[in-house]
Amino acid sequence: MNEQFEKYLTPVRELNNLVIANIEKLMGLQVKYIEDSVKVGLEQLKTASSITDVESFKNYITTQVEVSKQLTERAIEEGRTVAELSNSYATEVQKVVKDAMKVN
Image (cartoon, rainbow, N blue to C red; front, side, top):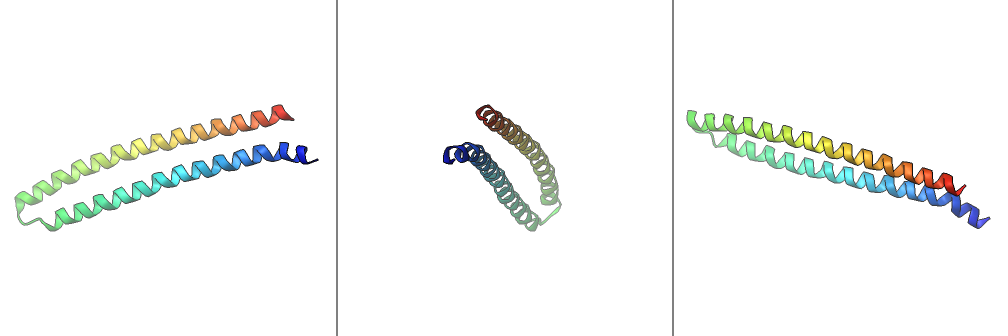
């Protein structure tokens, strides 16, 4: 009876571990994104507060365009990373389920 219970419990445990690992990876990405966004925002506020003339305003606007471009590129890259994590997770889940079906 104990062996049969273990046979059914093993895939459940493996799936739970996959879920936890995936959540940790996604949360890590989110925390890093938030930290980086706050840093960029603060830097932009500091730069904006140092505008003293037309030339510094032009420089600020130019910098804003570049920062926006970088943030867009980063969002695209992070979207790819999340998609890769999702695909990897789905593949691992399928493997666990397939292995569990073989045992039964």
